Image 1 (cartoon, rainbow, N blue to C red):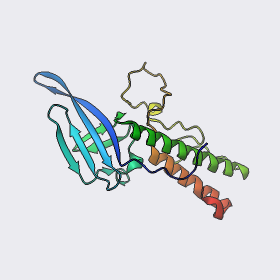
Image 2: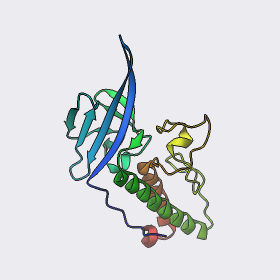
Image 3: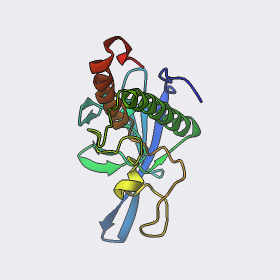
Image 4: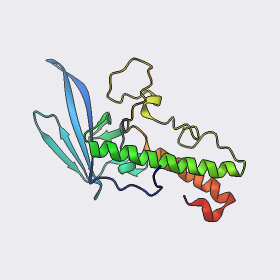
Amino acid sequence: MGGFEPIPPPRTLNFLSWWHETTAKGSVRRDLRLSYDTTDGSVTLGLDKKTATLYRLSHLEGRYGPVGPFDLYVGAALEVLGRRLTLKQTADLATKTWVEAEAARLRRVQERLLDELRTYGREVGNLPGGGVAGSHRTTSASWGLDTGRRRVQNAVDRRRNASDPLRKLARDNEFLRLQVAEYRPVHGDV
């Protein structure tokens, strides 16, 4: 089933995104590769394969401060160089594997906390992150975000694609830990 200890991320988390710009010659697709260095929080942006333009940023500012590994997943919306973009794909297997493994770990922790609350007759409905306790319906597909895959409109994509918002799962788990701590202060840690 797996443990409850955090899984260390790979040295870099790599994601792809793209958008279309209209020029005098028609529509042009712009590609972006975002590489997040987990050791220092810096970001390298590679724009367009043809021009091979690279930008190195000390950090990206996110909703909760500087962007960290938990803020990066398929479907995450970021402000990058004055443009709002959505991370549409993982660029390598290590990134995909880590995001999915960490999301699975956070869901295991959440299930354990919910089970602990149920032993005290406490049911939790909605979580602060917007999800429903125990349902794990917090993926970008359930929000209707474009995850970079072609699919039939309104179809539910159940394939694992690194689209779980880790920060929301972690915040929901912290909320549940506080609930458990009301009953068992020593056992609020899972």
